[in-house]
Length: 342
Ligand SMILES: Nc1ncnc2c1ncn2[C@@H]1O[C@H](COP(=O)(O)OP(=O)(O)OP(=O)(O)O)[C@@H](O)[C@H]1O
Ligand SMILES: [Mg+2]
Image (cartoon, rainbow, N blue to C red; front, side, top):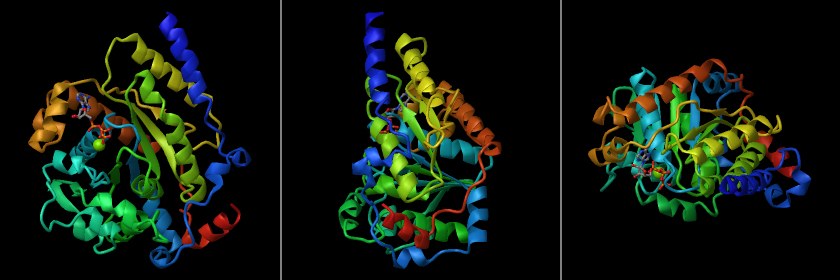
């Protein structure tokens, strides 16, 4: 009991660090512009009608948590594979220099294989980089080269929007139903690119006390990107991974998070986020499948891990009905006055 009380007090303090989106005056750090004046890439825009239609029909999801080992890659890969198995056309973008999502699906990006690094280096388009790995499922692979992108982009005036512009180019010619982005365990420029390209954020969380500590920073980064670069961005799903069924701590953490979400301000980008009913239980087959280069559905389709991810995928598809209509994305031209006002 004592443990629960002290954990609860600390958790309440942690969650209380979130600021309402409108409260920018008390947030001098986050008021710093994070994107310099734009040119070049950003000006290659489609017309507003096309763009709105494209954004309404295609779901773009960044799977993000700067905490390591919480199930981002396992979830990105198996959500993408599960959606493909349900007949959706899916692109999985591996944004982690560790290349785990690529390896998980059997792609080891060696030698001259084009990777997502080439997209950030503006040497290749996404269409030249993505590869089909199974029916309905494409992967834009990554490898350690991507680690250089963070440094190389430092002085680029378009560093936060490279991915969004490449994705826009690709999907104009070749629409996808879903684009899933596996983010690295950091809040650097690669994750910011994912948040700028995405309309939705899914946050995998491991339901123990320390796993929640980073949520404050993660939520405020989402709010900042939503305010400065991507007004459409919403945290739409929170997913419990590596779930230990029947433990009191896991249940308490889930309840606290649910309580926090219901009490959040309507302006916050995480307002209305769904705590997925499906919880991904610990299952050894999920840990084994990457070494066979297979999704859980190919590796062990009858195991509890496959059942959990398929149930999750059905929840994700069911959300399609409820997603709000989207305002057109912030244009490069609109960003200038936004930044001037900062
Ligand atoms: N439900 C699960 N049951 C058992 N093992 C799991 C489960 N989910 C993930 N794992 C294993 O836990 C480890 C971390 O998972 P994963 O790589 O998906 O996390 P991550 O958040 O992407 O990590 P990183 O921050 O390093 O990118 C991996 O070895 C993975 O196979
Ligand atoms: Mg990962």
